[in-house]
Image (cartoon, rainbow, N blue to C red):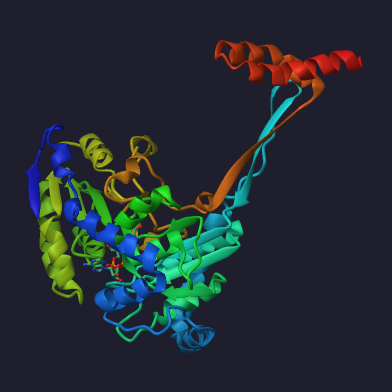
Length: 429
Ligand SMILES: NC(=O)c1ccc[n+]([C@@H]2O[C@H](COP(=O)([O-])OP(=O)(O)OC[C@H]3O[C@@H](n4cnc5c(N)ncnc54)[C@H](O)[C@@H]3O)[C@@H](O)[C@H]2O)c1
Ligand SMILES: N[C@H](CO)Cc1c[nH]c[nH+]1
Ligand SMILES: [Zn+2]
């Protein structure tokens, strides 16, 4: 853990550095995997399943029998929880549908936008250190609301060559049947290039470790991606109204994801910091994944700030995936938040509820990308097409503007496409 007291704004960018792996080693490794999958297809996928997941696979596809068995085997209380989470995610994402708005920009010139689903989408579900079946809902629910025709899902197999029952159950709830036992950078490459078994898609979604995230970034010239969503992060802003036990629990919740997760506490109160550090040690010792969390805590940041205004400004510089406001919150303060993936307000809004069931999406930009990217939403699964329709009057009303601009750009043919119609209208009268 690194601690800072009243750092100057000049120091903030260096404090905000993420513990990302050295990209000089990760890019060549991922490039080699992509090249191999593009050239050797399924054979390369099976080779990497053996190398990274420790399993020799005969078949990459999950069979209907495996899906049906998972649906039968799933624990009833887990089934109920998944159904409630799905319901909330469905409600929130359905509310993001937008009505078509037709605008007459000039008399007789009407413009509007219509949405169409992206036809083929690929969902990556992390499974290296934990089978994140919640991510199936976060991606599968909006994909099915949008009406994507082909939904492909890739996830790493476990040591027995199986996919976790809850992943298969959640997928079946979203109507996803094309499921493949492929993880890591090789899964992203397979969905970008296609193999004999795995279809190529138009857009790839989903979080993952740094290999997955770098593969998505490299393949962006071949296929669309949702965003760079890598190792989990949280930044908590705590004032004296915060509960140190809650803050510690929230920091540990993200720290347990992976050794490269990053957690940051920014507080205006030295006592709250002290008590939170004590609570972290107490709670950490009780966690099954304490080794992972402890490693992640090594690159945690604890920052004492003079006031909440500076704390928010620091958070905007960090651009956290998740921001928890364990402080007195007003609407004016919320307006000061410019960069964050998802925000949790007050002592009773733990980040875990957004991970699973409040309804918001947990696939969010990490590593500072919240400066420019939004988390996954219904919109991520659509293309937006603009339309315009002009009457003859409309064309006359706008003609001079277009011909003047076209001719000033030296593009006479553009101008003529308008003028030929004007002559036609004149003749017809
Ligand atoms: N940003 C978000 O929205 C979000 C959401 C959920 C999870 N996450 C993050 O997703 C990540 C999940 O990571 P994970 O590792 O558990 O699962 P993962 O499925 O992303 O990665 C596992 C795969 O990584 C590959 N791999 C492992 N070691 C490798 C190596 N040395 N070289 C090349 N490839 C290798 C293997 O193919 C393996 O199947 C965590 O970091 C978690 O914090 C982020
Ligand atoms: N916190 C993760 C996003 O960074 C999402 C997740 C899934 N399961 C639990 N948590
Ligand atoms: Zn989480």
